[in-house]
Length: 477
Ligand code: ADP
Image 1: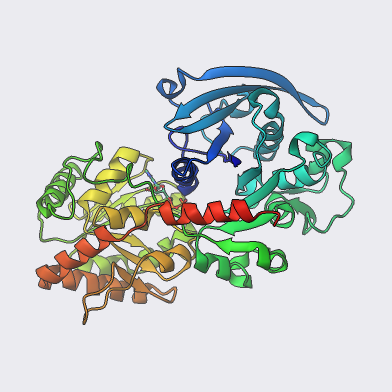
Image 2: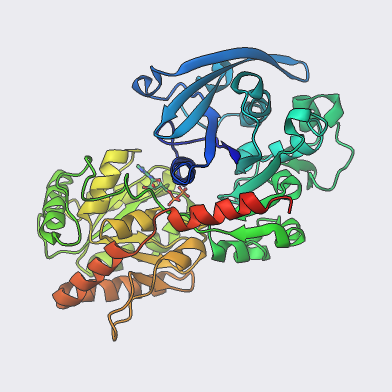
Protein backbone atom coordinates (compact mmCIF):
# COMPACT_ATOMS: atom_id res chain seq x y z
CA UNK A 1 0.00 0.00 0.00
CA UNK A 2 1.34 3.41 -1.05
CA UNK A 3 0.36 6.55 0.87
CA UNK A 4 1.19 10.15 0.07
CA UNK A 5 0.93 12.25 3.23
CA UNK A 6 0.43 15.92 2.40
CA UNK A 7 1.12 18.58 5.00
CA UNK A 8 1.85 22.30 5.03
CA UNK A 9 4.30 21.70 7.87
CA UNK A 10 6.27 18.66 8.97
CA UNK A 11 9.01 18.06 11.47
CA UNK A 12 11.98 18.05 11.42
CA UNK A 13 11.72 20.60 8.60
CA UNK A 14 9.07 23.05 9.71
CA UNK A 15 6.70 23.59 12.60
CA UNK A 16 4.24 26.13 13.93
CA UNK A 17 1.99 23.75 15.84
CA UNK A 18 0.84 20.21 16.49
CA UNK A 19 0.28 19.39 12.81
CA UNK A 20 4.05 19.33 12.25
CA UNK A 21 4.47 16.72 14.99
CA UNK A 22 1.72 14.57 13.51
CA UNK A 23 3.18 14.88 10.01
CA UNK A 24 6.42 13.48 11.37
CA UNK A 25 5.34 10.85 13.83
CA UNK A 26 2.33 9.26 12.11
CA UNK A 27 4.26 8.52 8.88
CA UNK A 28 7.14 7.23 11.00
CA UNK A 29 4.83 4.89 12.92
CA UNK A 30 3.26 3.64 9.67
CA UNK A 31 6.65 3.13 8.05
CA UNK A 32 7.54 0.93 11.01
CA UNK A 33 4.60 -1.26 9.92
CA UNK A 34 6.28 -1.50 6.50
CA UNK A 35 3.82 0.82 4.79
CA UNK A 36 5.32 2.81 1.92
CA UNK A 37 4.34 6.27 3.13
CA UNK A 38 5.90 9.46 1.79
CA UNK A 39 5.47 12.99 3.04
CA UNK A 40 5.14 15.95 0.69
CA UNK A 41 5.57 19.48 2.06
CA UNK A 42 6.75 22.95 0.93
CA UNK A 43 10.45 23.73 0.71
CA UNK A 44 10.35 26.77 3.00
CA UNK A 45 13.42 28.97 3.14
CA UNK A 46 13.22 28.75 6.94
CA UNK A 47 14.27 25.08 6.81
CA UNK A 48 17.71 24.68 8.39
CA UNK A 49 20.31 24.22 5.64
CA UNK A 50 21.97 21.36 7.48
CA UNK A 51 18.76 19.34 7.26
CA UNK A 52 18.47 19.55 3.48
CA UNK A 53 22.06 19.68 2.28
CA UNK A 54 21.87 16.04 1.20
CA UNK A 55 18.51 16.35 -0.53
CA UNK A 56 18.35 15.01 -4.10
CA UNK A 57 16.94 17.22 -6.81
CA UNK A 58 14.44 15.13 -8.76
CA UNK A 59 13.56 17.69 -11.41
CA UNK A 60 11.34 20.62 -12.18
CA UNK A 61 8.41 21.64 -14.33
CA UNK A 62 6.09 24.55 -14.90
CA UNK A 63 2.76 24.53 -13.14
CA UNK A 64 -0.09 26.32 -14.87
CA UNK A 65 -2.42 28.12 -12.53
CA UNK A 66 -4.85 29.85 -14.80
CA UNK A 67 -2.80 32.75 -16.24
CA UNK A 68 0.19 32.05 -14.01
CA UNK A 69 3.08 29.84 -15.01
CA UNK A 70 5.01 28.91 -11.93
CA UNK A 71 8.24 27.00 -11.43
CA UNK A 72 8.06 23.86 -9.33
CA UNK A 73 11.15 21.98 -8.21
CA UNK A 74 10.95 18.65 -6.40
CA UNK A 75 13.61 17.52 -3.94
CA UNK A 76 13.79 14.24 -2.08
CA UNK A 77 15.22 13.52 1.33
CA UNK A 78 14.98 10.63 3.77
CA UNK A 79 14.35 10.80 7.49
CA UNK A 80 14.57 7.33 8.94
CA UNK A 81 12.42 5.05 6.79
CA UNK A 82 10.26 7.88 5.45
CA UNK A 83 10.84 9.65 2.13
CA UNK A 84 10.05 13.39 2.09
CA UNK A 85 9.34 15.33 -1.08
CA UNK A 86 9.92 19.07 -0.91
CA UNK A 87 8.09 21.38 -3.29
CA UNK A 88 10.29 24.29 -4.22
CA UNK A 89 9.16 27.70 -5.42
CA UNK A 90 10.95 30.68 -3.94
CA UNK A 91 8.27 33.16 -4.93
CA UNK A 92 5.81 31.38 -2.65
CA UNK A 93 8.00 29.82 0.03
CA UNK A 94 10.98 32.12 0.50
CA UNK A 95 9.41 34.04 3.36
CA UNK A 96 10.21 34.64 7.02
CA UNK A 97 7.16 32.77 8.27
CA UNK A 98 5.19 29.74 7.14
CA UNK A 99 1.81 31.48 7.10
CA UNK A 100 0.15 34.82 7.57
CA UNK A 101 0.56 36.37 4.11
CA UNK A 102 -2.04 38.13 1.95
CA UNK A 103 -1.58 35.45 -0.71
CA UNK A 104 -1.72 32.33 1.50
CA UNK A 105 -4.67 31.14 -0.56
CA UNK A 106 -2.60 31.32 -3.74
CA UNK A 107 0.48 29.84 -2.08
CA UNK A 108 -1.39 26.74 -0.92
CA UNK A 109 -3.41 26.44 -4.11
CA UNK A 110 -0.06 26.23 -5.86
CA UNK A 111 1.17 23.68 -3.35
CA UNK A 112 -2.02 21.61 -3.73
CA UNK A 113 -1.67 21.49 -7.49
CA UNK A 114 2.05 20.78 -7.18
CA UNK A 115 1.24 17.78 -4.97
CA UNK A 116 -0.67 16.23 -7.87
CA UNK A 117 1.85 17.26 -10.53
CA UNK A 118 4.95 16.12 -8.64
CA UNK A 119 4.17 12.56 -9.72
CA UNK A 120 6.02 13.36 -12.98
CA UNK A 121 9.23 13.57 -10.98
CA UNK A 122 8.58 11.19 -8.10
CA UNK A 123 6.89 8.43 -10.16
CA UNK A 124 5.14 7.56 -6.92
CA UNK A 125 1.55 6.57 -7.69
CA UNK A 126 -0.27 6.57 -4.37
CA UNK A 127 -3.22 4.38 -3.44
CA UNK A 128 -4.21 6.99 -0.90
CA UNK A 129 -3.52 10.71 -0.67
CA UNK A 130 -3.84 11.85 2.92
CA UNK A 131 -4.56 15.59 3.25
CA UNK A 132 -4.36 17.72 6.35
CA UNK A 133 -6.22 20.92 7.24
CA UNK A 134 -7.39 23.70 4.94
CA UNK A 135 -4.05 24.30 3.23
CA UNK A 136 -4.37 21.08 1.26
CA UNK A 137 -8.12 20.51 1.54
CA UNK A 138 -8.73 21.49 -2.08
CA UNK A 139 -6.84 18.40 -3.31
CA UNK A 140 -9.85 16.01 -2.95
CA UNK A 141 -11.86 18.47 -5.05
CA UNK A 142 -9.14 18.54 -7.73
CA UNK A 143 -8.96 14.73 -7.69
CA UNK A 144 -12.69 14.45 -8.30
CA UNK A 145 -12.83 17.15 -10.99
CA UNK A 146 -9.77 18.13 -13.05
CA UNK A 147 -7.86 14.94 -12.29
CA UNK A 148 -10.87 12.61 -12.44
CA UNK A 149 -9.84 11.23 -15.80
CA UNK A 150 -6.11 11.17 -15.13
CA UNK A 151 -5.13 7.48 -15.38
CA UNK A 152 -2.36 7.98 -12.83
CA UNK A 153 -4.98 8.74 -10.19
CA UNK A 154 -7.67 6.35 -11.42
CA UNK A 155 -7.43 4.18 -8.29
CA UNK A 156 -6.38 6.89 -5.83
CA UNK A 157 -8.56 7.54 -2.78
CA UNK A 158 -8.35 10.50 -0.45
CA UNK A 159 -8.42 10.89 3.32
CA UNK A 160 -8.81 14.35 4.83
CA UNK A 161 -7.83 14.99 8.44
CA UNK A 162 -9.16 17.99 10.33
CA UNK A 163 -6.59 19.11 12.87
CA UNK A 164 -8.33 22.39 13.54
CA UNK A 165 -11.70 23.31 12.09
CA UNK A 166 -11.33 26.96 13.00
CA UNK A 167 -8.90 27.77 10.20
CA UNK A 168 -10.77 27.13 6.96
CA UNK A 169 -9.36 29.00 3.97
CA UNK A 170 -12.31 31.14 2.87
CA UNK A 171 -12.00 33.12 -0.37
CA UNK A 172 -14.13 35.10 -2.77
CA UNK A 173 -16.19 33.23 -5.36
CA UNK A 174 -13.93 33.88 -8.32
CA UNK A 175 -10.91 32.52 -6.47
CA UNK A 176 -11.16 28.92 -7.64
CA UNK A 177 -11.26 29.92 -11.28
CA UNK A 178 -8.43 32.37 -10.75
CA UNK A 179 -6.30 29.56 -9.28
CA UNK A 180 -7.27 26.50 -11.24
CA UNK A 181 -8.46 27.90 -14.55
CA UNK A 182 -11.76 28.32 -16.38
CA UNK A 183 -12.66 24.65 -15.88
CA UNK A 184 -13.04 25.47 -12.19
CA UNK A 185 -15.44 28.33 -12.87
CA UNK A 186 -17.80 28.46 -9.96
CA UNK A 187 -21.30 27.42 -10.90
CA UNK A 188 -22.78 27.66 -7.46
CA UNK A 189 -21.75 24.14 -6.38
CA UNK A 190 -23.15 23.91 -2.85
CA UNK A 191 -20.23 21.70 -1.85
CA UNK A 192 -17.87 24.67 -2.03
CA UNK A 193 -20.05 27.66 -1.27
CA UNK A 194 -19.67 29.39 2.06
CA UNK A 195 -21.54 32.63 2.65
CA UNK A 196 -20.73 34.79 -0.33
CA UNK A 197 -17.44 32.96 -0.97
CA UNK A 198 -15.91 29.50 -1.18
CA UNK A 199 -14.29 27.42 1.54
CA UNK A 200 -11.34 25.05 1.15
CA UNK A 201 -12.00 23.20 4.40
CA UNK A 202 -15.53 22.54 3.25
CA UNK A 203 -14.21 21.19 -0.06
CA UNK A 204 -12.10 18.69 1.91
CA UNK A 205 -15.11 17.63 3.95
CA UNK A 206 -17.38 17.23 0.93
CA UNK A 207 -14.98 15.68 -1.57
CA UNK A 208 -12.66 13.41 0.44
CA UNK A 209 -13.48 9.71 0.53
CA UNK A 210 -12.98 9.60 4.28
CA UNK A 211 -12.69 12.31 6.91
CA UNK A 212 -10.89 11.94 10.17
CA UNK A 213 -10.22 14.24 13.05
CA UNK A 214 -7.76 13.99 15.87
CA UNK A 215 -9.79 12.80 18.83
CA UNK A 216 -13.04 10.92 19.41
CA UNK A 217 -14.59 13.69 21.46
CA UNK A 218 -13.76 16.37 18.89
CA UNK A 219 -15.33 14.20 16.17
CA UNK A 220 -18.60 14.39 18.13
CA UNK A 221 -18.24 18.01 19.15
CA UNK A 222 -17.83 19.34 15.62
CA UNK A 223 -21.25 18.02 14.68
CA UNK A 224 -22.76 20.70 16.93
CA UNK A 225 -23.10 24.43 16.20
CA UNK A 226 -20.89 25.45 19.14
CA UNK A 227 -17.82 23.60 17.81
CA UNK A 228 -18.85 23.21 14.17
CA UNK A 229 -17.53 26.61 12.99
CA UNK A 230 -20.46 26.88 10.57
CA UNK A 231 -19.56 23.58 8.91
CA UNK A 232 -21.59 21.36 11.24
CA UNK A 233 -24.22 20.82 8.55
CA UNK A 234 -21.62 19.49 6.10
CA UNK A 235 -19.99 17.39 8.80
CA UNK A 236 -23.35 15.90 9.71
CA UNK A 237 -23.94 15.18 6.04
CA UNK A 238 -20.71 13.15 6.02
CA UNK A 239 -20.95 11.84 9.56
CA UNK A 240 -20.86 8.19 8.47
CA UNK A 241 -17.50 8.84 6.84
CA UNK A 242 -16.13 10.81 9.79
CA UNK A 243 -14.04 9.21 12.53
CA UNK A 244 -12.02 10.52 15.46
CA UNK A 245 -8.57 9.01 15.99
CA UNK A 246 -6.64 10.39 18.93
CA UNK A 247 -3.13 11.60 18.16
CA UNK A 248 -0.12 10.20 19.91
CA UNK A 249 3.38 11.59 20.29
CA UNK A 250 6.66 10.15 19.13
CA UNK A 251 8.01 8.24 22.12
CA UNK A 252 11.60 8.24 20.82
CA UNK A 253 11.67 11.96 20.27
CA UNK A 254 9.78 12.84 23.44
CA UNK A 255 11.61 10.74 25.98
CA UNK A 256 12.91 12.37 29.17
CA UNK A 257 15.42 9.55 29.52
CA UNK A 258 17.22 10.40 26.29
CA UNK A 259 16.07 13.91 25.32
CA UNK A 260 19.33 15.78 24.62
CA UNK A 261 17.58 19.14 25.05
CA UNK A 262 17.14 18.61 28.80
CA UNK A 263 19.55 19.78 31.49
CA UNK A 264 19.34 16.31 33.06
CA UNK A 265 17.81 13.10 31.81
CA UNK A 266 15.44 11.13 34.02
CA UNK A 267 12.60 8.64 34.04
CA UNK A 268 9.88 7.63 36.47
CA UNK A 269 12.35 5.75 38.64
CA UNK A 270 14.69 8.75 39.01
CA UNK A 271 12.51 11.64 40.26
CA UNK A 272 15.62 13.43 41.55
CA UNK A 273 16.49 14.05 37.89
CA UNK A 274 13.23 15.90 37.41
CA UNK A 275 13.88 17.94 40.56
CA UNK A 276 17.31 18.92 39.23
CA UNK A 277 15.70 20.12 35.98
CA UNK A 278 13.26 22.20 38.00
CA UNK A 279 16.00 23.90 40.01
CA UNK A 280 17.96 24.72 36.88
CA UNK A 281 14.86 26.03 35.10
CA UNK A 282 13.93 28.21 38.06
CA UNK A 283 17.44 29.65 38.17
CA UNK A 284 17.54 30.21 34.40
CA UNK A 285 14.19 31.99 34.55
CA UNK A 286 15.06 34.22 37.51
CA UNK A 287 12.50 32.56 39.76
CA UNK A 288 13.15 31.72 43.39
CA UNK A 289 14.87 28.33 43.41
CA UNK A 290 12.71 26.26 45.70
CA UNK A 291 11.56 22.71 45.07
CA UNK A 292 8.61 23.12 47.42
CA UNK A 293 6.95 25.83 45.34
CA UNK A 294 4.69 24.32 42.67
CA UNK A 295 5.77 25.45 39.23
CA UNK A 296 3.02 25.77 36.61
CA UNK A 297 3.98 25.77 32.92
CA UNK A 298 2.28 26.97 29.78
CA UNK A 299 3.74 26.16 26.36
CA UNK A 300 1.28 27.31 23.76
CA UNK A 301 0.26 29.61 21.00
CA UNK A 302 -1.13 32.61 22.84
CA UNK A 303 -4.55 32.66 21.21
CA UNK A 304 -8.11 32.92 22.53
CA UNK A 305 -9.03 29.30 21.93
CA UNK A 306 -6.39 28.12 24.40
CA UNK A 307 -8.35 29.59 27.32
CA UNK A 308 -6.17 32.54 28.21
CA UNK A 309 -9.16 34.67 29.11
CA UNK A 310 -9.80 32.26 32.01
CA UNK A 311 -6.23 32.66 33.20
CA UNK A 312 -6.45 36.43 32.86
CA UNK A 313 -9.58 36.44 34.99
CA UNK A 314 -8.00 34.71 38.01
CA UNK A 315 -4.31 35.53 37.67
CA UNK A 316 -3.98 37.33 41.03
CA UNK A 317 -5.87 34.51 42.78
CA UNK A 318 -3.51 31.96 41.21
CA UNK A 319 -0.55 33.78 42.69
CA UNK A 320 -2.33 33.84 46.06
CA UNK A 321 -1.97 30.05 46.00
CA UNK A 322 1.79 30.50 46.20
CA UNK A 323 2.66 29.11 42.77
CA UNK A 324 5.31 30.03 40.25
CA UNK A 325 4.63 30.18 36.52
CA UNK A 326 6.64 29.92 33.33
CA UNK A 327 4.97 30.80 30.04
CA UNK A 328 6.46 30.08 26.62
CA UNK A 329 4.45 31.26 23.66
CA UNK A 330 3.77 33.77 20.95
CA UNK A 331 0.52 35.02 19.53
CA UNK A 332 -1.97 37.68 20.52
CA UNK A 333 -0.36 40.90 21.58
CA UNK A 334 -2.92 41.18 24.37
CA UNK A 335 -1.81 37.94 26.04
CA UNK A 336 1.87 38.60 25.47
CA UNK A 337 1.35 41.88 27.33
CA UNK A 338 -0.73 40.28 30.05
CA UNK A 339 2.08 37.92 30.99
CA UNK A 340 4.71 40.64 30.61
CA UNK A 341 2.74 42.82 33.00
CA UNK A 342 2.52 40.12 35.66
CA UNK A 343 6.15 39.14 35.21
CA UNK A 344 7.11 42.72 36.06
CA UNK A 345 4.81 42.66 39.05
CA UNK A 346 6.06 39.27 40.30
CA UNK A 347 9.54 38.90 38.79
CA UNK A 348 10.56 35.97 40.96
CA UNK A 349 7.21 34.20 40.50
CA UNK A 350 6.44 34.50 36.79
CA UNK A 351 8.67 34.31 33.75
CA UNK A 352 7.37 34.77 30.23
CA UNK A 353 9.34 33.84 27.11
CA UNK A 354 7.73 35.40 24.04
CA UNK A 355 9.40 33.26 21.39
CA UNK A 356 9.18 29.91 19.63
CA UNK A 357 11.90 27.75 21.11
CA UNK A 358 11.75 23.96 20.89
CA UNK A 359 14.67 23.33 23.27
CA UNK A 360 13.29 25.61 25.93
CA UNK A 361 9.86 24.01 25.52
CA UNK A 362 11.31 20.61 26.47
CA UNK A 363 13.16 22.09 29.44
CA UNK A 364 9.90 23.60 30.63
CA UNK A 365 7.98 20.34 30.30
CA UNK A 366 10.76 18.61 32.25
CA UNK A 367 11.23 21.27 34.92
CA UNK A 368 7.61 22.04 35.75
CA UNK A 369 5.22 20.33 38.17
CA UNK A 370 1.97 21.31 36.49
CA UNK A 371 0.95 22.04 32.92
CA UNK A 372 -2.00 24.35 32.38
CA UNK A 373 -4.13 23.98 29.25
CA UNK A 374 -7.70 25.22 29.82
CA UNK A 375 -8.69 25.35 26.13
CA UNK A 376 -12.09 26.56 24.96
CA UNK A 377 -11.84 23.82 22.33
CA UNK A 378 -8.97 21.44 21.61
CA UNK A 379 -9.08 19.06 18.62
CA UNK A 380 -6.45 16.85 20.27
CA UNK A 381 -3.68 18.85 21.87
CA UNK A 382 -0.13 17.63 22.08
CA UNK A 383 1.04 19.82 24.93
CA UNK A 384 -0.76 17.72 27.54
CA UNK A 385 0.65 14.49 26.04
CA UNK A 386 4.21 15.76 26.18
CA UNK A 387 3.57 17.06 29.71
CA UNK A 388 2.33 13.63 30.83
CA UNK A 389 5.38 11.94 29.39
CA UNK A 390 7.68 14.38 31.21
CA UNK A 391 5.81 14.10 34.51
CA UNK A 392 4.28 17.56 34.48
CA UNK A 393 0.71 17.06 35.66
CA UNK A 394 -1.85 18.53 33.25
CA UNK A 395 -4.68 20.76 34.40
CA UNK A 396 -7.09 20.79 31.47
CA UNK A 397 -10.63 21.57 30.46
CA UNK A 398 -12.67 18.52 29.46
CA UNK A 399 -12.96 19.20 25.77
CA UNK A 400 -11.82 17.40 22.61
CA UNK A 401 -8.60 15.48 22.96
CA UNK A 402 -7.95 16.88 26.43
CA UNK A 403 -10.96 14.95 27.65
CA UNK A 404 -9.83 11.79 25.85
CA UNK A 405 -6.24 11.80 27.11
CA UNK A 406 -6.21 13.13 30.68
CA UNK A 407 -7.85 10.92 33.30
CA UNK A 408 -9.25 13.01 36.18
CA UNK A 409 -7.45 12.51 39.48
CA UNK A 410 -9.55 10.74 42.08
CA UNK A 411 -8.41 11.82 45.52
CA UNK A 412 -10.02 8.78 47.19
CA UNK A 413 -8.56 6.04 45.02
CA UNK A 414 -5.49 7.93 43.80
CA UNK A 415 -6.31 6.99 40.19
CA UNK A 416 -5.88 9.38 37.30
CA UNK A 417 -3.24 11.37 35.46
CA UNK A 418 -4.29 15.01 35.84
CA UNK A 419 -6.81 17.60 36.97
CA UNK A 420 -9.82 18.41 34.81
CA UNK A 421 -12.83 20.71 34.85
CA UNK A 422 -15.94 20.77 32.73
CA UNK A 423 -17.33 24.26 32.23
CA UNK A 424 -15.52 27.14 30.60
CA UNK A 425 -15.34 29.00 33.87
CA UNK A 426 -12.32 30.65 35.46
CA UNK A 427 -13.18 29.65 39.00
CA UNK A 428 -13.78 26.02 38.07
CA UNK A 429 -10.28 26.09 36.66
CA UNK A 430 -8.96 27.79 39.78
CA UNK A 431 -10.55 25.09 41.96
CA UNK A 432 -8.60 22.44 40.07
CA UNK A 433 -5.37 24.42 40.38
CA UNK A 434 -6.07 24.70 44.10
CA UNK A 435 -6.64 20.93 44.42
CA UNK A 436 -3.44 20.24 42.51
CA UNK A 437 -1.41 22.64 44.63
CA UNK A 438 -2.86 21.16 47.79
CA UNK A 439 -1.91 17.64 46.77
CA UNK A 440 1.59 18.83 45.83
CA UNK A 441 2.11 20.61 49.13
CA UNK A 442 0.45 18.25 51.58
CA UNK A 443 0.72 14.73 50.22
CA UNK A 444 4.18 13.96 48.87
CA UNK A 445 3.45 10.28 48.45
CA UNK A 446 0.17 10.88 46.62
CA UNK A 447 1.86 13.42 44.37
CA UNK A 448 4.73 11.12 43.49
CA UNK A 449 2.29 8.33 42.65
CA UNK A 450 0.36 10.69 40.39
CA UNK A 451 3.55 11.69 38.56
CA UNK A 452 4.41 8.00 38.10
CA UNK A 453 0.97 7.30 36.65
CA UNK A 454 1.18 10.25 34.29
CA UNK A 455 4.61 9.19 33.05
CA UNK A 456 3.51 5.60 32.52
CA UNK A 457 0.36 6.43 30.53
CA UNK A 458 0.77 5.22 26.94
CA UNK A 459 0.13 7.88 24.33
CA UNK A 460 2.52 6.58 21.72
CA UNK A 461 1.42 6.42 18.08
CA UNK A 462 1.17 2.67 17.78
CA UNK A 463 -2.55 2.24 18.45
CA UNK A 464 -3.72 5.19 16.35
CA UNK A 465 -1.37 4.26 13.51
CA UNK A 466 -3.13 0.89 13.32
CA UNK A 467 -6.49 2.63 13.09
CA UNK A 468 -5.27 4.82 10.23
CA UNK A 469 -4.03 1.72 8.48
CA UNK A 470 -7.44 0.12 8.84
CA UNK A 471 -9.03 3.22 7.32
CA UNK A 472 -6.64 3.21 4.36
CA UNK A 473 -7.31 -0.46 3.76
CA UNK A 474 -11.09 -0.14 3.92
CA UNK A 475 -11.32 2.77 1.50
CA UNK A 476 -13.46 1.93 -1.45
CA UNK A 477 -14.77 -1.28 0.14
P1 ADP B 1 -1.73 23.64 18.42
O1 ADP B 1 -1.42 22.70 17.32
O2 ADP B 1 -3.17 24.09 18.48
O3 ADP B 1 -0.80 24.80 18.49
P2 ADP B 1 -0.94 21.46 20.18
O4 ADP B 1 -0.98 21.29 21.66
O5 ADP B 1 -1.58 20.39 19.37
O6 ADP B 1 -1.53 22.89 19.83
O7 ADP B 1 0.58 21.53 19.69
C1 ADP B 1 1.41 22.56 20.10
C2 ADP B 1 2.84 22.10 19.91
O8 ADP B 1 3.67 23.25 19.68
C3 ADP B 1 3.38 21.41 21.14
O9 ADP B 1 4.37 20.47 20.68
C4 ADP B 1 4.06 22.55 21.90
O10 ADP B 1 5.09 22.10 22.72
C5 ADP B 1 4.60 23.38 20.75
N1 ADP B 1 4.72 24.81 21.03
C6 ADP B 1 3.73 25.73 21.16
N2 ADP B 1 4.23 26.95 21.38
C7 ADP B 1 5.58 26.82 21.40
C8 ADP B 1 6.68 27.73 21.57
N3 ADP B 1 6.48 29.04 21.78
N4 ADP B 1 7.94 27.24 21.53
C9 ADP B 1 8.14 25.92 21.32
N5 ADP B 1 7.17 25.01 21.14
C10 ADP B 1 5.89 25.45 21.18
